Amino acid sequence: MDHLTAIRTFQRIVETRSFTKAAAHLGMPRSSVSKAVQELEQHLGTKLLQRTTRTIALTTEGAKYYQNVTQLVARLDEAEAELRGVAAASRGRLRVDLHSSLAQFLLIPVLKEFREGHPHIQVALGVSDRPVNLIEEGADCVIRAGQLADSSLVAKTLFTDKLVTCASPEYLMQYGTPSSPADLEHHQIVGYFSASNGEVWPLRFSKRGGEHLISRFDVATNDSASHINMIVNGAGIGQTFAFVAARFFESGAIVPILEKHTCSTIPISVIYPSNKQLNARVRVFVDWVVERLAV
Image (cartoon, rainbow, N blue to C red; front, side, top):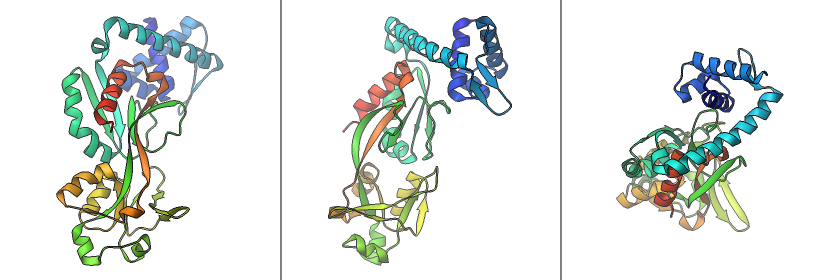
């Protein structure tokens, strides 16, 4: 038995909650993953996992063992990275998940620069507005808008963006330009709803003593890149991030409106699990993206 490989295999099974997913992440046959865990359990003389046809759960001994080996593996990775140098350790597959608008308008335009500096890292982009579980889905890090709610994750803010209200010149020529949020009652609204739970994200406007929210829509999507495309093509008035709208403002495809009423700010951050903070691939990517995209 390769003891270290068996430990890493056990660790990945726990993190993904699946033998099949662990095998895919490790590039191993599923049979080899099962064999590694069986040999590890035989070596330790105790059961680490309770397996059924649908679920995998840690035994009491397995939970304690996982906690201990995770710390040891992290220290080992750190020691190897220090000896070999970050550049030498920065090889292999890096999975980065992000919203479609963040991919299209923020990361992809500059991704070539990262690849040129780190040609041995294979970058796999998971592009979806659906929130992902980093551990279960094997993502190394995500780039997301909004506040970090999970204390088990580490977040580094790239910049704080703001919402802008906008519409195409053609739409405004046909329907007129609103002078206040109250005027939107007579306009077409392009909305956005959550890809995970279907919740509509309201348009947010400032008012004395708080916020004025408009939750209705005439047409909506759960994809952020499609959302801006609908506004550009005259479907109505909507709110998006300033970094998304910037290029369309420059080209004149859309124009900002209700500027004095729109002032909500949202942080854009790169987020990764705390137990992966020593991974060399994640480290160099996080360092690069913070330097490259920070405002």
